[in-house]
Length: 244
Image (cartoon, rainbow, N blue to C red; front, top):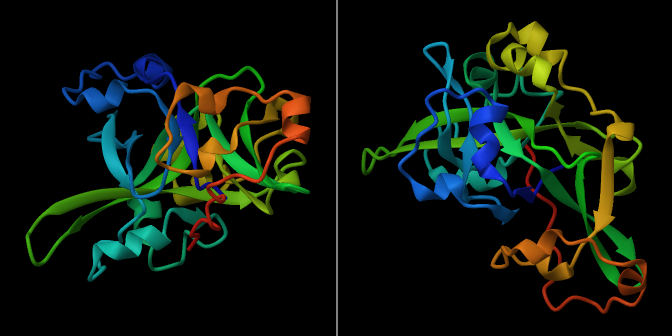
């Protein structure tokens, strides 16, 4: 699953995803994020007229046929084994796949003191991309257009299995074009666990439990002593993220 993630160096998005036209006027595009939470607006990279573009969309997919945008809060993750057939995702999977830039995500492990948050990254700490889907929904009452997205999940690898039975799909750089514009069959073949030996996990402060906290200290690694003596956090860890 994926209910929180980080994007700490957004200035590198243009180079990482080969965006020649990356010059957004919204300052939020350039703000480091250390605790991205569902329903917030996040950076998303779809293809438009055959070119990659950077946009900001609401995290929580609202299908085009939805009567109410609130459904998005229950669709932050999409199971890989259902996206080609489930009504909420099948059209987006066929026509509107996207990349979601990140450089880590959080999971929680049960310890005697409660639940300890861990940040999971690539071994070298580099930026990567989640497999994503996006949609455009129009509010029938206000005629407002909302663009939203979700993160695709798959079975775990040996590392992430310590925390959860599922993990977000990470798309390798050489597969970006295939995920964005390949056939559905080619895209489905990419929905597999990322190699565990190319990732790492380390404990972080329980401050990450609250989405109100979004400072750089959240990604600092706890020492073994700090982890073993940690007190139960004042803010409980987030509930299980919604996965359709």
